[in-house]
Length: 629
Image 1 (tube, one colour):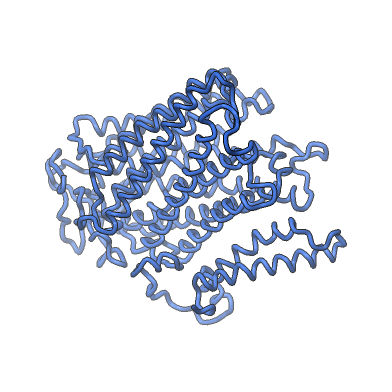
Image 2: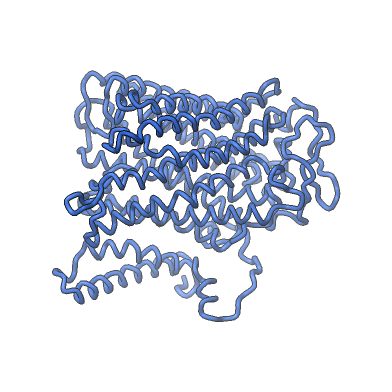
C-alpha cells in the first residue's frame, strides 16, 4: 500500500487531512473574529463536509493532471494507457475511458437504488398499520427524506448519465468523450454526495428530515444533519453540470463524418436536450442550497421574514430547477425507448424529426411551469392561471411522443423480449402518470389533493413507472454490449411481470386514498385508511423482492452468461457494429455515416460504413426474428 501513488489509500489520507484543515481554519477564523466558543463542533463539521471530500478527490488522483499543468510543468500527452478495465479493481480508480466510467456510474447508481429501496421498505413497514410501530416520527421523516433524495440525486439522474456515457460516444462514432478527465471527476463527485446522505443518520439530532425539497425556513432551523443534504446536493449538482457540458461538446464536435443532427439516434437527441436543461436549471438548486447554508452558517437572512427575508423565494428558486428536473429524469428514458421500440418492432421511428423537435419543446416549456407546485403556498393569485395553462400545454409535446411510439408499433412484428416488455410497461405507466399530471394542472383539483397520497401516486407513476422502467429496459438492451454476455431471458421476464404487477398494486390505490384525504409525509394516519395501507405495503414488498431478482440475473449473467454476439438485436446504430464489449478505443477506423439510424425494413439501407465497406447488418425483411430469439 503506497500513500504516494493515487488511489483509495491516499484518498483516505486526503480526507483526514481535509478534516484537519477544516478544524484549523475554523478555529483560527473564530479566534480572529472573537467568537465564543473558539472550538465549535457544528462549525467545524460544516467546513469539514467541504474539506474532506476535496481531500478524498485529491488523494484519489482526480486532480493530478490539472495540478501538473498548474505547476507549470511540461504538459504530458494523453497516451490513454489507463484506458479500459483489466480487473474489478480498476473500477475503484480514476479512469478516463468512457466505457469504464459508464459502468462505474451504472453500478454505483444501482447500489444506491438498493439503499433507497431499502428505506422505502422501512417506510412501508411503518405504515402497514396505524400507530407507531418501530420508529419515531422524526426517524420516519429521515427515512423518507433520505429515500427520496438518494433515488433522485444518486440513482435516476446519474444512471442515465452512466448509460449515455457508455453508449453515446459509440453511437456517434467517437473514440471517447470530449473531456475524459472531467468525465472521471464528474463520476467521483457522486460517491461524495451519497456518503454524506448516509452519514447524516449519525449526526446529532438525526438525518435530514425535511424531504428532498428541503423547504426553508424549516431547513434553516433543522438539526445539523440538514447540512449533509445541503452540501451533498452541491457535489451531485456539480457532477451533473460537468457531465452535461461534456455531452454537449462531445455531441457538437465529435460526431463521425456524415452524421448530421438529423442522422443522430434519438438517444443522442434526448441527451442533447437533457444536457441543455441541466446546464440551465441545475445552478438554481445549487443557489437555493447555498442560501440555506449561508443562513445557517453565517446568519444571513434570505428566508427570515422577521429580518426582511422572503420565505416564498426559496420555493420559486427551488422549483425553477426542480420542475425541469422532472424532465432531466425523463428525456434520456424517451431516447432509450425510441431505440428499443424501433429495433424490436423492426420499423422506422414514426415522425423522427417531430420526435426530435418535441424534445426541444419540452426543454423550453419545462421552464414555464414551476409555480404549479405552489398553488397552495400563498404566492400571488394572478400567477396561478398562467401556470395552469402552461402545465396543460406541456402535455402536447409529450403526447406527440406517445402517439409516435404507438404509430411505430402499429403493424410492426413485435419481439416481446425483456427490453421490449419494459418499454411497453413504460408506455402504460407513463401515460397514466401523465393523465394524473394533467389533472393536477387544474387549480381546484390540485388544491383538493395537495399534500395527499394522490401526489405520492402521481410522482411514482412518473418517476418509477416513467423513469425506472426505461432504465431497466436500457440496462437489459445494452447489457450484452457492456459485458459481452447475454442475460437470462426467463429471469428477465419474471422481473418484469413481478415489477409491473407489484408497482400497480402499490401505487394505484394511492390515488384513491389520496382523493379521500390521506395526507402524505406523516408517520401515522386515520384508522379508515388501515386496510388500503396494509394492502399497499404488502404489494410494495413484491416490488422490493423483484429488484433482487434483477440483481441476481445481472450478477450471474455477467459472470457466466452465454457469450454475446456483436449485434444480437440486429440493430443499425453504430454501437452494435463493433464487438461486445467494444475495443478499448471503440473503432479501428472512424466510421462514415451514410443514412438514418432506423431504416428497418428498407431494402439496402445502411447507417454507417467502415473503410468504405458496407456494414453487414441491415436490409433484413421487416418482422424477421433476431438471432437468439
